[in-house]
Length: 207
Image (cartoon, rainbow, N blue to C red):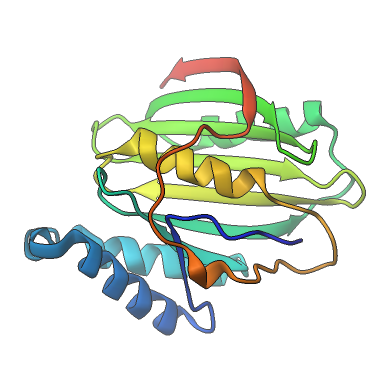
């Protein structure tokens, strides 16, 4: 699977959990500027993202930034499934993910990427009202696997801008070989937000 660079997506090393966590924390602190000393959650966010990436053998870990937002962390990887998923089966999977996500408000939508792949989007705002999470599942129409993209913002500030940049990133996904690649991703810099993959509303629920 191939991913193309998008401005505002800053990838870090995925060689080890320690290297990923350290590089994430460095980028997050740099982007937060003077606020970093008052935000102990940055270290927690970096460590959790690195652990998640290693546990699921993620191919991409990145910081998503926008001048009007606090930075967020994006983790992307390929997950094997038992059979090729139809769009309907992908939606059912996301219903499960939404229900398993704990207390909060969940919005589920479906859409299509630029290359015509179906995409299912789960957006969650925790019951505490602090932070936000976006998960996008894109099934491979030719192989039993799915691409899973998870965006987490510890503060939620500038969430619409961050979600738009993540949507642009997912929109360019292309299924090719068995691995996740992203030639040129290190070139990511700031960008104005753009809407995620074209979608239509689905289920909204509060837990």
